[in-house]
Amino acid sequence: MDIKTLSHMSLRELQAAYADKCLSPVEVIHVTLAQNDAVGNKINALYGVRDREARAEANASQERYAAGKPLSAFDGVPVTLKDSVNAIGMYWHHGSAIHGEGVIGTIDSPPAARLKKAGAIILGKTIMPDFGLSASGVSTSHGIVHNPWGLSWSTGGSSAGGAASIATGIGMMSVGSDIAGSVRLPASHCGLAAFKPTQGIIPHAPASNVRSAGPITRRAADLEAWTKLLTGPDTADRYSMRYCDANRDRKLSVGATADFGFGPSTEPAVKACFENVKAALEELVGNIQCVSKTPGFNAYLPIDDSLKLRGWAEYSSASDELRDLVPQALYAWFREAEDWGGAKIREVECGIEKSIAYCVDLLADVDVLLTPVMPVVNFPVEDLGVDPLMPLRHTTFTALFNQSGNPAVSICGGFDDRGLPIGMQLVAKRLDDAALLKLATDLEFKLNIFGDGKRDWPVTPMA
Image 1 (tube, helix red, strand yellow):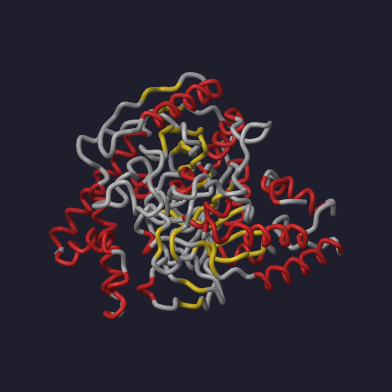
Image 2 (cartoon, one colour; image 1 turned 180 degrees about the horizontal axis):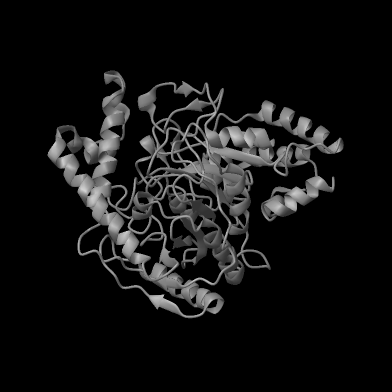
């Protein structure tokens, strides 16, 4: 077993190898931790790596398999958690030096608790940008995360370290969280698959009506199994509910658009990739409708304002002596929220309701909508986003569906001339998660981008 072989294994293949005892958790954890040792200084994806604990847990898992008593099919499978996902004994920094030495976890968030109960082995925490409020890997608490497809390019964010680690073969899944595209954006940057479920399908804490926990994997085919493990009601999340796979296999009507009528212009490479993926999707589902609806206003701007409020709230609650550690570009973006009163906040709320109505209208005549994940391919690793004055401005195609609660999945649609991945997004009506994940899996198989002598994931990061 080597890291290249492991990176090409699907979750189902790894589980079968464990069950047949032709591969052991001890061997997989050894190879995985060795890979982190080899590439960690290049990509800077993880912190708080549980080397000793992970090896001990792998030994215990191997003993359970030998006795024919694994805790679940996920026993011994290596995973990672985003900085913001609480776990007992692991530090929370929310990406920012503004939180000093960090806060050590005293409770397990629902995703962490379910992974532990299943016997999955948590390797460590993944690095995220300050407050999770830039679509980058720039963190004042842990430095910059680098994209293994090109170390001078961004991983996207905010689940930056999760995507970079999965792309290099470190773990089979990373739990991220998504408030404006934060699992889908880094998946797009790093050539991966990621899922933002219908709000509540994967419980998280604290409860939120816009932020969802979601899995990042190398393959869309692996997303459903992890979603089923992580799903279900939880007292820590009042919005939580169970994943439903009824009507999973029905025929779907599909629409497509690469233009919402606002935001940055869609780059030619993204448009070309979109057309290729659309053609492949049409071979799967038949005729695809052209969805040309636009909202008549910039539907992202009220969302951006709501994120400024989040940034100001976190900044203003920190110690005075630490506030200067926040990136100045980030502070310059959210500082105007300091003076907002009730009238402005009500304006933001009304704008978001209009944005949600637009999302509903987009899916009024179709079951699933194809869009790019981003209008751009990538940007330099040290930047917070495409627009220095608005670090999440390029989340045109992702942020709206956090507000509306629609499930959305990102897969790798292709590459540009520089060899950088380009992500495509499929969005479905609320609670249609199972049919969406099946379509994403079928489409990824149809595109056949990885394997068969084509491309490998960058287990050796590219300069």
